[in-house]
Image 1 (spheres, rainbow, N blue to C red):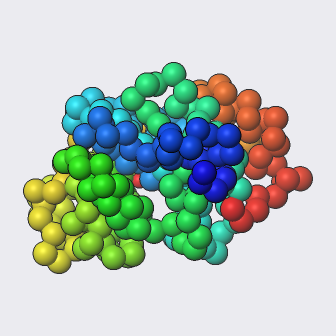
Image 2 (cartoon, helix red, strand yellow):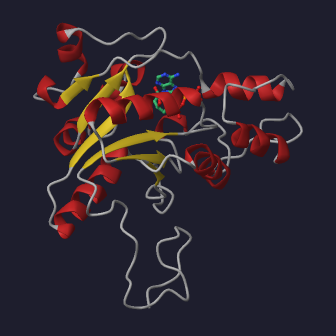
Image 3 (cartoon, protein in one colour):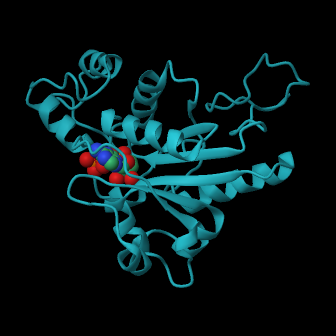
Length: 240
Ligand code: ATP
């Protein structure tokens, strides 16, 4: 029997012949990956996931909370278990959505390129031709050059870029300037999703001030934040 882990993939008592649950089911051939800190998840995330799923006819959108967000190493972040729990609550009820603990099971900074390598290797093991789309906003795309191994990232996945208020979709010239050297714009789909100005930092600020976050996050996430006293000054955020 495989060793017990905290990732829910192999636990004591599992039937030995069953093997671990894959990160992505073999039948899912067109898959969107929405990586983020999700501190907390909000309707801005959910709307882009749903509208990219529809536009690209995805079988699945995988929400991937970062354990140690590489661009937030100097910041305090809510423990990963709380962030993941909120993602689970938010996506419950959408059968095309799933959460993956793939980054929670890895030590060190949660580099997207490492996650994509694992997922591409898994597809090879499964013997399926899977197409991955990493979903990110135009704002995040503008910073892609600063990510870990961006050229490799573009080799492993296509991108689904969505607008974010203040960061409209790039035109062809802007897109070319944002991509790593040698990366083809053919690997990028720009998708006009409904712009929502929600941000996790705004939700945290409001919660910290005791203000309403209703309609910014799903009701179950709102209740989780309230019940766990997240983002309150008397409950400082800790590094994941
Ligand atoms: P923070 O405010 O703490 O920086 P965030 O709201 O940007 O957080 P992340 O978890 O860092 O949330 O975002 C994950 C991905 O979702 C990133 O690509 C981000 O740009 C995108 N995203 C987040 N909010 C929106 C939104 N309202 N519209 C479009 N894209 C969004």
